[in-house]
Structure formats: structure tokens, C-alpha cells
Length: 140
Image (tube, rainbow, N blue to C red):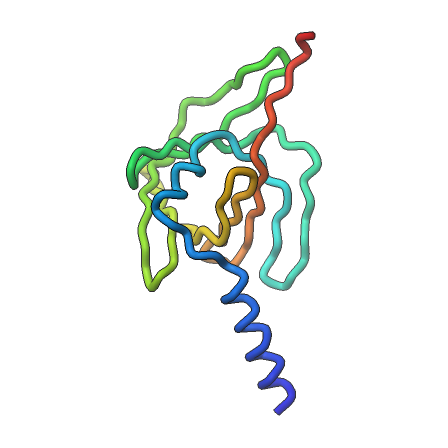
């Protein structure tokens, strides 16, 4: 019985932690995002102090793309030109990013989105915690 109560408490806490993503807030997805932490389904966490690549999102309406880019020390970014098409969808009051390439299709649920933080969960229940990327430069 105690296990049932514990399960219900954890389930309610998990549901209440994810925020409702408003359509007007989706514009905040645009820009450069850097993975800060990954949380595995078993709760194990992996922190990322430095990333050689970051994700660039460009959304117009409910369609857009995500692209991996590499920040350059002198400013700017380098890319391989590959883009993952994306569409925003809503299912059962949850907001998803549906990705499509010529080789695969997958989706991630948006758990949190604001000016400085993005949290998504993929279909394997792995959470990716992003922070807004701060450009760096060696210019003074």
C-alpha cells in the first residue's frame, strides 16, 4: 500500500512539474541552445560543462528546423548544412516537436520553455535540459 501512495505521489509530482506550453511562447524556441544536463530514465544525470556543438532552432508558425552548429572562437558558427525538419504538434494537452529527416522520424515533448531554459523529453524518456547559448568571442 505504501508503494502505491509513493507511486501516486511521484506521478502527480511529475505531471505538475511540466508546464503548459502556450503557442505564443513557442517563439522562444528560436535561437541557439546548449545542452546543460541529460537525465536518464533511471534518474542518472550527466552534466555538460563544454559543448563542441549546439542546437540552432528556427521556427515560423508551427514549422521550422533544427541544425547542429559549432561556435567559433572569433564569433559566429560553423555548420555542416544538414537540417532536421520540425513541426510543433499537440497531443493530449502536451506539446511536441516532431522531427523528420530522410532517414528517421521522432518526437520530443517540450516540458519547459522560457527565455533561458528548454527541457525536452524524447521517446526513450531521456530528458535534455538546455540553456540559452551565450556567444563567446576573443574580440575585445
